[in-house]
Image (cartoon, rainbow, N blue to C red; front, top):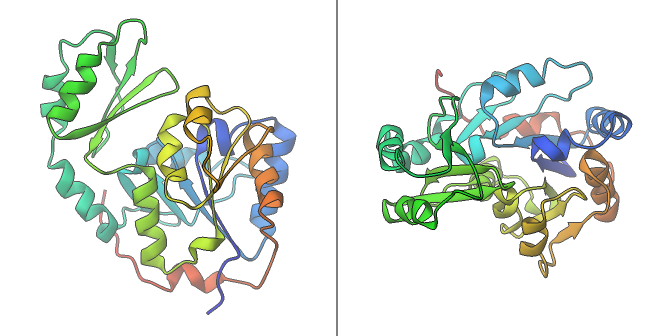
Length: 259
């Protein structure tokens, strides 16, 4: 069975969707016309956003989606959850949404996001008002707390984030990890780089992420923003074209569940 020579696992906002229109169009055309590329969206966005996005003219359709900061996994064609990969996430979360909201109800600087995520609770936060106690309360209750872009305060199941979920997907599909390129721009992408996979922090990455990846030999810091930074990394890591791989996405059958 042929294997993809490029497995692009990319964040969306600021990364795959970042940069100017010309560079985005060039990258999307490159991915769409390569017969050896497998595309995975790895994002904090929910599936409704993805469904709207892939209807945009010129937007490549991903083979898989690791959504909601790694707390959900979907098939790219059907947009249905991947049951075997979501099962341990669901168990770790254990319907904790209401409990988390009660825990943080009186904490300063937090504004609950309206999107009804299934396995996380997310807030917008004010850096000037946020108390360290809020993070401590989340962690003491057995969850992970992720701050990113000086705006987002996310409560996740312990041990679940973009990087670990992507690794499980790659391993389940039997993909070659040497052919994976991860891409991101904020602190909620840090776990992608901590996997040890080849990675690119695009030129518009937040300063905290740039500081966190300093010294990581697997991560390339591009000076180009967004999509141009991804294209720069494809050249940097020499992800050249190769044989066709259409069958790879069905090499391991992943079951789906209704939303």
